[in-house]
Length: 142
Image (tube, rainbow, N blue to C red):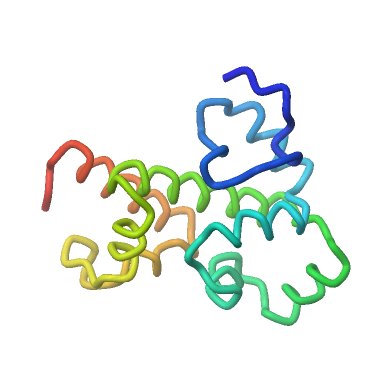
């Protein structure tokens, strides 16, 4: 996918994908700048509190990042990009953002009766969501 643009330039949910793995690795190493995170967060259905939980950062730390326009460290940057990619996949599978957002909010029997978005706080949970989205995409429902 030959984008001349670096991942930290102008990024939206639609733009991030997992086809250019080396660009993603580079972006994680450089760290996601707060302004880029804000652009991503503004397009997502998640509140600051939810992002803070997903990234295991206190809301106070989040506010400091915002005020100081800081760059997220590699671990937080990776999680931001992982969540963005699984969100992109979900919108693609469900056909639009509203349908996927509703699915993220609804308790899910296949996921043990929890809301899918509750799994976004760990890499393992994100993997479970990816697997579930693949099953839905291929019509294999539990």
